[in-house]
Image 1 (cartoon, each protein chain N blue to C red):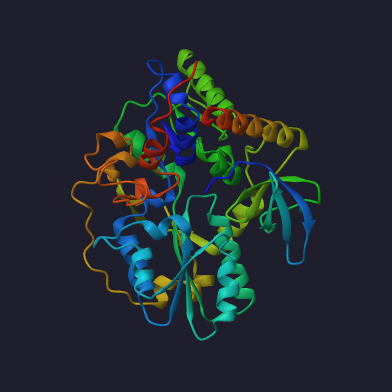
Image 2: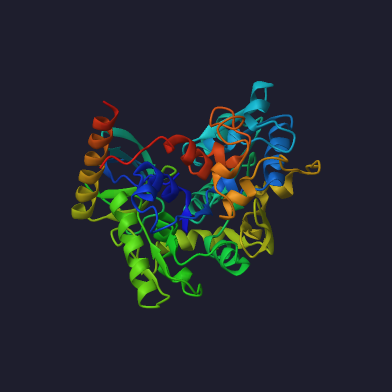
Length: 79
Length: 333
């Protein structure tokens, strides 16, 4: 349940719903648990379809870089 | 002890347990919502799903947990009952609106991170005046479970890697009364190593405090909007049954009076058969750190992720599933 990959808000729709991008995968997420509300371009943590926290861009990019490195390393291990 | 099943999987995935073998022993905690759901709650889910005119919804992993009589929700679905797994609990609203002639039940499980979405669901159901949507709250709380494990003296525990996303919601403040080094951690390898390092520092200095190694997401106060939504919709139960622990006072949440029209436990009178655990499954011991998955006679032969006997092998956060998935990982150095 705990998906720790930062997701970027790419579009905000009606009813507190946003389209978020998680390492290239796009899906809907509810913004009901965030106050103040995030804006397009913000990075958030997702949990069961809800954004639960806004992350700073610096932290989010650092985290995404580490995820990509880990994935690359795992791919190398499998080859 | 790492409390959270997400941490257990990260520790195994990145082979941190092997890296620190001989120095640090990781004892796996109960922070896996599917694993701690007691057999009587699984039986309740199955009996609710079998009622006529019901669409039963829940989060994915729960569908595969066998009940007392060896049948899971998935088995019941194959017998023709309408059982659906949800990505977001708000999807239950769409299902209720599109199926006005059916009763839609959402079986809510999870720790503090998964509780606020259920609170949002209850508020929306009330705003929309839905008459055919019902919720079963099985939401449990982290501090009573940690308190139980420390007081019961189950294992020798020098420190606790605290749950990352639970703490995003609750803040650091909920751990203040626990008398042991606790360091809140994220889910990446470096997060866990940093948390281990901070626990060691406390251990050397004979300190017992709550620290934060997940500062990019966790604050002292937590997510106040989420906390407010929980307070508005849910109350603390006097007691709640956990797998592996049994009845634990003030450790779970029920739907409050303002939202009781959506409480499936009040709306439906379900007669439950006496619940029973599988005689050979040691999942109850694995959950509280009394045993390792590999101590179980069923592990990897009769009990696998494809054909799970206990909830610890079902869940993507369960310790048995982590051992099964990553047991072949050898450290490359």
